[in-house]
Image 1 (cartoon, helix red, strand yellow):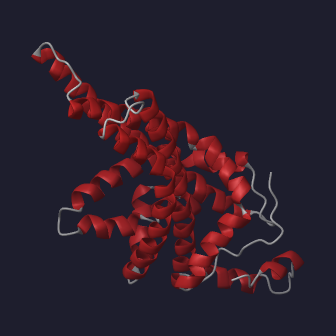
Image 2 (image 1 turned 180 degrees about the horizontal axis):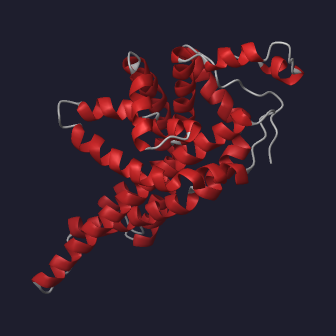
Length: 297
């Protein structure tokens, strides 16, 4: 269990710079408990995503280098089918990894907000994840497919992707079903699409740099293998480095999830003003801890 001495007020309107600062301040202030939750509940899926990614890359290199010896057409066909299946399985676990990060990070922030002093335990986070995991997986996979194919329809997928960026935090915070969550997303993003898009681009760029650093060793191994450097032909080495890269990249997506949560709370305050109503209700019920920690941002 972790206790933060200076609880951050999540339910607050913030401008672009304030949201960006709040994102990294929150991560810094809650790094240990947040990382522990991600380590416990995301790692198994990220590990599988990395392993299947490494296996796919190894088979792909065999095909490119011509090392795959096929005596019959049946052997060649089987190799192609296995590779294709491997790719599909890899994509599924990668997508599942990002869904789990979203569920864990948003659940962490909901528990943090509901706690009087910012006390967060892994068990409380898991309770929220468990309550939303089934709906989150089928909704996440479905929306991912729709956004992907919608991207080819004059950019509709991009528009929908920004709208759906707050899907998981809405679902967890407001305890809504898929249809209600989508309606809420469209309501909150209305007249805020460009602001949300711009914020996500900047955060995504920062996250991408961090993720690239984690993927650098895997990239080096692949380049050296392409040039036939001795010792780099090991499939095990390729699988290990790809696994590490996949895990690191999925972990890094927690940055965007924290930022999305702050964007969501900003939009809620802008549209509904729940935080302002809450503060009015607190008049006459002064809590020294609460008042001390307000105004951090």
